[in-house]
Amino acid sequence: MPPPDLQHIPDSELWQMIIDGHVAAYSELYERYWELLFETAYWHLPDKAAAKDIVQEVFVYCWQKREQIRINESVAAYFRAAVRFKVLNYLKSEDAREKYQQLAGRELPALTYNTNDHMAMADLQASYRRELDRLPDKMRAVFIDSRDHGLSIEEIALKHAISPQTVKNQLSAALKKLREGLGNFFME
Image: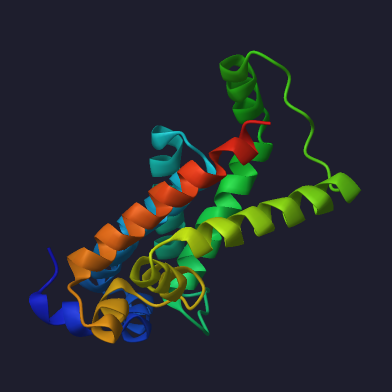
């Protein structure tokens, strides 16, 4: 467990320490974002084992390439984007297609980009906005600060004068509600 003084260091400073090979700083960053990244992966890919593997792969990759990675904006946003990219690669892999084909009992369509994809994306975005608007005001604000603004759990807690655990609970509850509300979209 990293020394307690690292808990108050901003992400950008932690990343600089990580570039220099500071393992405890990396452990702190891992503790801050592992759960959030797992929820991100699991939301896109409802397979807990695969979601955990993807998050681990992202953390290992970022440690190995720390000297080459330049994070100009939010560390959290960078990690979330890396997880989403890994999820997409996973879904494109033939092994994943076969696994989900067996689970679904039917053939999965090939991943292509066409007009139907644009329409589906527009429908998904509209559904997402509608479900987001249905969240309680405080929960929605916490979720938007996390996902759209890339704020860390600690930053959100300070902004809203709530505990970090409350932020985690709000994010988890928001993801659950969004997953439930958007579930029918993915069952078509």
